[in-house]
Length: 192
Image 1 (cartoon, one colour):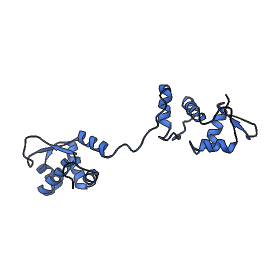
Image 2 (cartoon, rainbow, N blue to C red):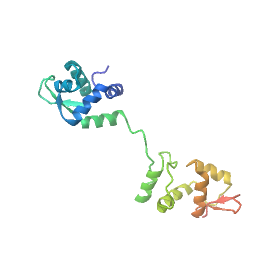
Image 3 (tube, one colour):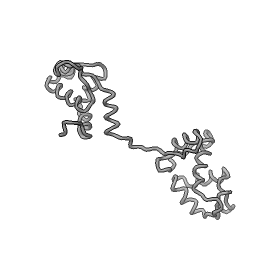
Image 4 (cartoon, rainbow, N blue to C red):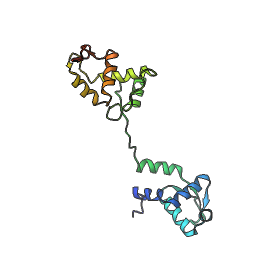
């Protein structure tokens, strides 16, 4: 085991032990010595001391400076835990980055409703939030080239890249006047 710096396995090991989680619970309420922790949990002092030492190693707790390690008062190191969690568990969910030329409201709506890959995570309620829906439709219609005629199958394929509600979004684009179509649905195009 690396004694210089804790690794991900050390962090997981520290946070997956029931006794260590109980110690964190005690220290979340108030600072305590190893003896106080041992007494409250009904465990031998040596076990409490080893758990606290390991929690200190991974940065979850910190002792008072200037005292011997057995007499230290330990407290929860919330800053250390936050830093450790961010360093060891990086953001797993990335967000969509809208074009910088867009206004702030448009950027905010796109970040809210789009996945990192640009697909639509959630479709806003068009009756309650017509402005949000229009921003999403304006974004979606950019996938269509003005002046090009598309079959319904081609329109569906393009929309499916963004969301599985193909027919609903196709209808919304037509109703908003962002896509035009023949009455029989045989041809679609983006008006210029």
